[in-house]
Image (cartoon, rainbow, N blue to C red; front, side):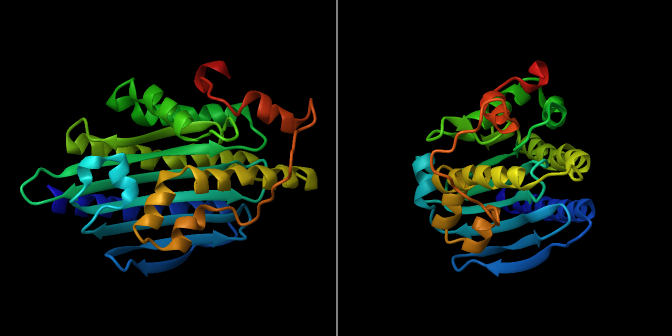
Length: 305
């Protein structure tokens, strides 16, 4: 199964990277993505595309990678011990958008495919992916729209998938050391192989294809909202949570570094500017306090807002 399936998945992922970059360049209107192609010493490589100092996006990265090797990294065999002794192929598209306007949320999306093989054994394969939203000054209609698109994307595959993947997202993007969610969630799934290959592939494509439909209308609504230094400083402070999650908890970051991926590409999800402040606590009754009080915990966004 592996070779033709892998070719088909890679073709989709490269096309998805192209479509997302084109749409975000249009939405930004002031900058374009610069591409760097890279090769991995142990096998494989990728295309990293970064847009900087746009009219809307302070920095955004959209990366495609396909890496392969004879031996699984420790992070993967700890997660899945049955993979020991197998060669592997891992491919995916991952992106993070950091807008300059604090009223436009940060967004993240990722879709991926993994297959591990050895002689005399059936291949082990799975899909993963998702997208999540991190607002600094939340608008209920934006959050509801984001989750509505997520639900619609999965509806054809069963009404149980959205609540399952939504809860998985809330759990995965939970900052244990802060006792809060990274944002208002969305979808997250991993190890998807409990259906026929083509159906699992279709679920991954549905999630990948839904990202632009979820994010572009929010950009359009918020990109011209006036803001000042107070909002900017709060945005930079809250971006620190993004850095903390990616470096402390994110399995994809760990997998990329342990497999010898390109460090610049793995860490291009980091915000271009960020700040930390010791013992920060928002003033009661402020918009900043509203984020903490109402949005940094799992909620049923479609029915509560």
